[in-house]
Image (cartoon, rainbow, N blue to C red):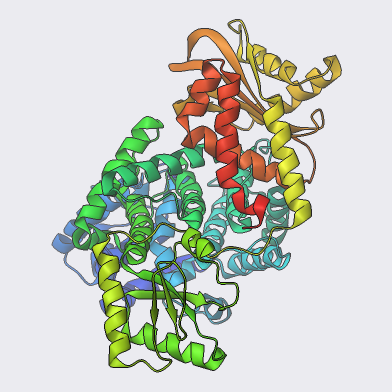
Length: 615
C-alpha cells in the first residue's frame, strides 16, 4: 500500500520514541483541548508514518479498544478540520492521510503550545525524556534559531516570541519532510525582496537542504511583520488595508464608538491581519485557547465581531474567517473599546503647582489614589498657561495650588488634599459625567517635526496633487493593453513609457491586483521614470467583466525608485484614503479631477497635520 502522504518520523530515534511515549503514564502529557489521552494518540499516529494495529495502540495507551474507538472518533473530527483523515481499515490498521502541508500544520498545532510554555532554549540544550518535542530534530531547531537570531542582530527585524517559535517549528518540520522525500523542493523561486532571499539562502545553508520553491514568499511575509514596515507597492498590502477598514467601520456601526481616532490601533490591526490572511491562504488553522471565554464572557462583543467578519469576508470575496481568528480579532477590538470607555469616563486634567516638582508629584499621587475618575495627563507650568491648547488637546480641568484667572474649568486645592478640596474635585467629576462624553482630544502633542522632513513631505504632497491625472481609454483588448495605457499616463516619451510598462508588469507578476471595493485594478510600481509620487485613473467607456469580476477602470500609482522616506509614507496614505474615502474613487471614476484633488488635500491635511506643523 502506498504511503506517500504519511508524515515521516522526524528524527532517527523516532521509532524508539514511540515506545517511550506509549509507556508514559497518562498524566504526563500536557492537557489540551482534546484531552491528554487523545494528545498521546495523535502523537503516536504522527510519529508512526505507517499503519499501526488498534490492539497495539490500545495496549500502549493503556486503554480499552472501545475507549480507543471513541478517542479515534474525536481525533478524526479535529484532524478533518485541518485537512487530515484518520483511516481505519480492518486487517491493516490505523494511519493518517493528508497532504504533507496539512500533516505538518496539524502537527505544528499540537506541538506549538508546548514550545510556548517552556524554556525552549534549555530544551535545545538538555533533552526532556519522553517529551513529544523529541519528535523534532534538535539540530535543525538549533540551526534555524541561530539564523533567525542573526537576522535580528542586524537591527532591522524583531520577531515576536510567538512568531519566532512558530517559524522555528515550521522550518524544522519542513526540513524533515524534505529530507525524507515527502515534499518536493523543485521549481523556480518566486520573486521576493533581498532580505527574504538572503534569509532563505542562510536557512538552506544551515539546514543542508533545499527548501520548497514557495518558502521565499512565506518568509517575506514574516520579515515584513518583523520589520514593522508597510510596503505600499506590495500587492497584498492594499488588501490588508481594505480588510482593516471594513472591520473598523463595521465595528463602529455595531458599537456606535468612533475607533479611527486611535492612531496605533489600525497599525496593530493590520500587523495581525497580515499573518491571519497568510494563514488563511495556506489553509493553516490555529488553536485559540481564549475563544470559549470570549464567546461566553463577552457574548455581545463576540456576536458583533462575528457578524462584521462575515460581512467583510463576503465583500472582499475571502474564504470564511475561522472562529479562532475571529476570537483574536475580538480581543483586539475589545482592548481598544475598553480603552475608549476608560477615556470617555475619565476627566482629563493637568496639575498647576509652582511650589516645585516634589509638591506637584505628591499632589498627583494623591489624585491618582483617591480619584480614579480623574486622569492627570501631566504637570503644567503657570507661566504661559495656554487654555486654547489645552482645549485642543481634550483637557477638561485644571487643578491648581494657586489662584487662577482663566476662562477654563479649574479648581484650587492644597498640595495636601483637605476635605473641602475633595468636595470640589468630586463636584467637578460629577459635572463632567453629567455632560456626557469627555471632550474630544488626542494624545499629547509630539515633539516639533524635523523641518527638513516636513519640507520634503510638503513638497511631495503638493507635487502629487498637482499631477493627479484622469484619462479616458478605449476598452482594452487585454490586461497588457490596460498596463500599456497606464504607462503612458505619466511618461514623457517612448523610453519612459517602456520603462514604466516593464516595472508595472513586474509588479503584476507578484499577484492579482484587482481591488473589489474599487471595482478596479491597482497598477502600481516604483520606477526611475518619475521624479515624485503620482496618482492617476484610467476610465473605461463602460464596466467590463473579467473572470467574473466587474472592472470599472484602473487606479495608477507610481513612486520614484529611490530611498526617499517621504515617498513611502505618502503612497501608504494614498492607499488608505482610497479605501477609507469612497468619495475619492467616485470622483476619479466620474472624471472629476478637481473634486478628487480637494478630497485628497483635505485628507492629507488631517493625516499629516502633526508632521507638517510640528503640533
